[in-house]
Length: 304
Ligand code: NAD
Image (cartoon, rainbow, N blue to C red):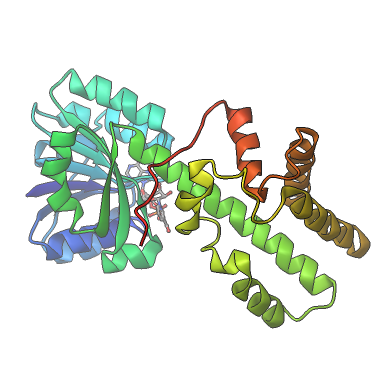
């Protein structure tokens, strides 16, 4: 296919190389002219503006820093829409705003341009090796059209739902990764400052129940928590609160700030005040559901 690609940064330049390997014809644009040189040496054409790229393409893809650039490139002067003919497909693979891509879908849709969000995860290595997880939001029939192209840049292509759904999934993914990174930092700074060798600490954590749980998102999550299965205690919430209290006491003793642990402890105290001390520790999930006014449930997985 003829693909216009805008934004040849850390991620985009690898995606372009892989699309070229897959036999697509590329027209590229970036505010940094030099970012296109490699692609041009492999036979890509240079576009003078995003509109110019759109005029020469069946699909235009953007891999840009964020919403500000996406809005400018999609809808701004000499942007994709300015050069779009009816039938063009626009796919944004940036991590951006779900609200923005829904608005772009609305505006471009009025001109016969079909729109998808397809943010990616897997880092620069994933982009280079075409092993990205791609989270797609668009009409189901459009997914059938774009997924063969996306398979050139990733090996895990998931249809999440309507336009914007891909970005929602991606933002949840990154929120989790960034918060867990901070929680890991809290645990390792606490243990190290309290005199434990980090290597021993990691061995203990990896071998323990948490380490074996797949970081909280392993298959046990669907089997128990997401079934609302916390009335049957496996590890009582009152014991969990005691443990977290001991950990935050230790942190006070050694002068280690633990803002996430403190917030989690407050949540467990609130659970105890609701009379949930005898429930399983996963009942803390119900507190967040109550605060968010939503329940998260999945179909029970088949027993293996
Ligand atoms: P980057 O900054 O390296 O690349 C962005 C590119 O867009 C640059 O080449 C820049 O010159 C270009 N650009 C900026 N404004 C432009 C404009 N108005 N018109 C045309 N080109 C413009 O960023 P990146 O790391 O490649 O990330 C791209 C997107 O992918 C971001 O949304 C990022 O959050 C997401 N992402 C990055 C990673 C990662 O590991 N780097 C992983 C997953 C997702």
